[in-house]
Image 1: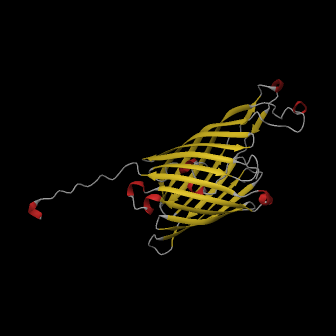
Image 2: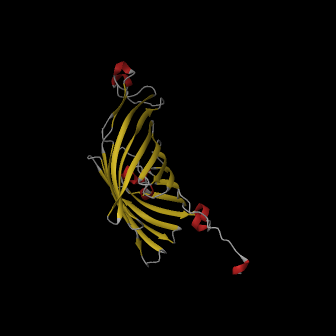
Image 3: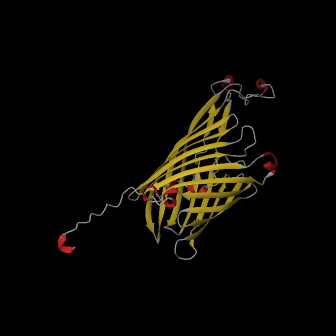
Length: 304
């Protein structure tokens, strides 16, 4: 795919990075850590690390996303802040969000060019880096424990990342951002109406107008504790997902909401013969900002 944004298989746990309208939608505070090794077996394969956090205060949601994407000699570093205002709409809530941040691009200085770099000024013959600003916006509508749908656009200004400090003023680094559009949706189906087994289908569609990618996901969750499922990324990969809520698994309420998830993608594109697949690990923790006060019980001999 020619799209510029990093991709994640466990995208249902990573809404903030592609839709600022989802900031604070859980009602508490959440932190998420991702690490992904894509197309293992390739030298210089894509490696992505991401940290995000968001919180809700009254009708206001705030979020922070930082990620690093390494592809061969090229490294991208993104840091952005998100804000969302949540208002009641019908049976659910609508989050109206914006984000702003910085994008930095750099090339290592160990690049080996087959052609003579002096013949093509776009070939870097030394390490170089540059940065630019970025903006995005999104809408996110959800009905608690039932469904969600969101639409967003990132890289709205389509700014350039360019370094013109060397090679006689001709940029060794010239990267043009493309505007990206995202559509997400998901539904939670309580199979037996007892919240024991919940089927969670979801989709994530993304396009930069030049190419389109669709992820179709199906998860089965047991007792809010374990989940497993599959994802199909059209013309790219089939993924397997597994996860556990550690607090629920060991019956420790103080860490309920601490989730660990793993994913493995089996490549189905033309790269299948050269790749051992992709691996992804997620660590996520969500908790309420306002804890329920502990109820004091007073006993009297008059009532014993």
